[in-house]
Figure 1 (spheres, rainbow, N blue to C red):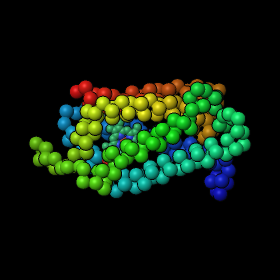
Figure 2: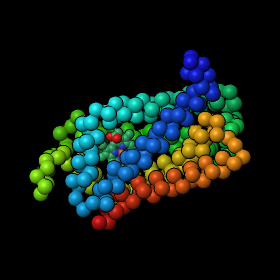
Figure 3: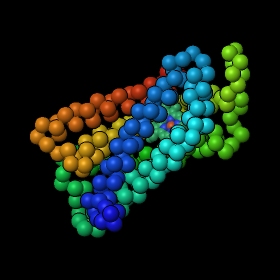
Figure 4: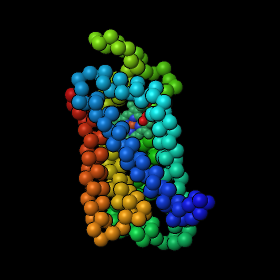
Length: 223
Ligand code: HEM
């Protein structure tokens, strides 16, 4: 067990597991956010956000999520620094994945996503959890909900926000394109037949996530 936490391959294994968990989180997060453009009112989005904020299972999941993010980022940094120390002159991480344009910049895209996450959480998550920025709204159905949806709508009417988010989604796409297949290869799915399938799934997943997330600010801005 301790070698899983301390050996390089153990760290890479745990980092990949956390990465796959984050891939699933992004699908859930995109589904919830897409309610903002699929529905004319913010009621559906706010209702699900309220459920997510109050349900005990989701609250436990949220702790696991933040743990997953931290584990993924800390182990990635440790492995990167270990690689730089071992081979200072441009050694590529691991030899189990094909070194492409995308894999070369994984650590750079990771840092940008980390910065994006801090800004993103300060804009929405912390405001909804700890601030007074989220007002309540009464819908014609009689429901009274915290209006997190309108907070997103206001942000995405500002060009600087829309452009900033679109750039970050593109960077996220670059990160996922390499990360998806790399994670599965680390977990042992390195096979003549399966590897091309995983690469294709990774490409489809990346396109879906990048375009899906990008459509939200674009549709809101031009609506
Ligand atoms: C159009 C795109 C996005 C929108 C509109 C959006 C919106 C939001 C909102 C409103 C919250 C607060 C939820 C709450 O407090 O109940 C939130 C939380 C969060 N977002 Fe995003 N988000 C977007 C993209 C992303 C991306 C690409 C990532 C990851 C790279 C991300 C990661 C997170 C995390 C980790 C949380 C905190 C956990 C949670 O509440 O689910 N978001 N987001």
